[in-house]
Length: 407
Ligand SMILES: Cc1ncc(C[n+]2csc(CCOP(=O)(O)OP(=O)(O)O)c2C)c(N)n1
Ligand SMILES: [Mg+2]
Image (cartoon, rainbow, N blue to C red; front, side, top):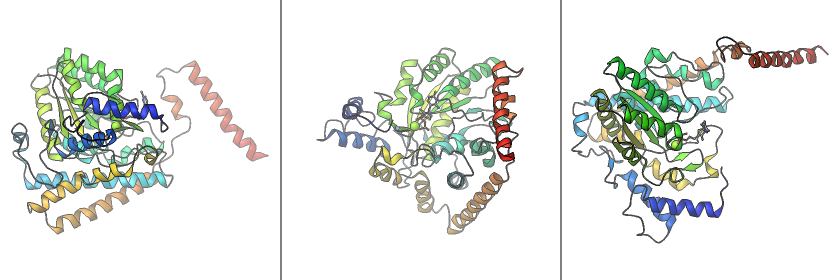
């Protein structure tokens, strides 16, 4: 996936400029197509795209928005500090998990670095009785739902198949099969609508997942059945090494129109805008107005997972441009400019972050190893001939080590 032909690169560039993925004004006004693509992406993320909902600029300046201001009208300085705390602690937890993988304590980790605002803003918009269907990267949403961060690590250490009770916090288990959770969410939403509940469902997925048939099917079903579901797409620009322009010729939020429900693009690095837009979409769902697609325009600042090396397929300049729009820095600038937080608040949070890091590290190291044969108990409720055969093969393999030791 990391090696592509010149023809593929050319076609990618022209697809990007034809689609005018986000800044049509920029298309055709510069000499090089490469510049056009970069400019178009940059324009969208900076808020130059009129379709992008933004309440906080990258400099932390609050900008008015006639449509969405009312969804955050009651927000207090304490609430803002709370959102900041959520993002800082989530990033600290995520950094600890990456370090744990590097030290051999986890098999794999999928970092959320850069996506904290999209996840905390949308996660804090959910109500306790709403139901959340995540992918494998929604550590910030899990935090908002009250799932203990240490529970997220068992699967990545390979000691369990999930790590938490989905119904404990209405937060489904992580789903690795790309896009499939949008169908689960749609079915669940159709069910709660039949029950007459006024709660809503939110399904998270990525820009890459938007190409999956499952996602298109869930759009069709949720629209036709008017299901109370919000499709929250974190467009972090990359699906492993594939850029978004290889997934679509139109901005992703516009896809919703063809299915008959609204789509909106929000600045995914602006926690306030993500909170406002998701509140709006969830309220629509609860009011019986059906599904909404929210495209949170953000950036995956790290590698796809700890098994990936992004330097093989993308340049530093892109990452540096997005670092300037860091979601945490943006809210910090706002808090400081508005005098909503003092040095004591930031220092205390730093201490809290370090304590969280330590707690996570200790909890992971203390996780008991599972019984090696437990894996065979979870495939079928009533057993299966193939599983029996595999169990026997595995037992023989294990026994072969004992023999070798005995020699
Ligand atoms: C059905 C399926 N196909 C392929 C994969 C391999 N895979 C894992 S992550 C990924 C990319 C997903 O990209 P995106 O939806 O943008 O989410 P992101 O990782 O960027 O958050 C792929 C292709 C998979 N897990 N499931
Ligand atoms: Mg992606």
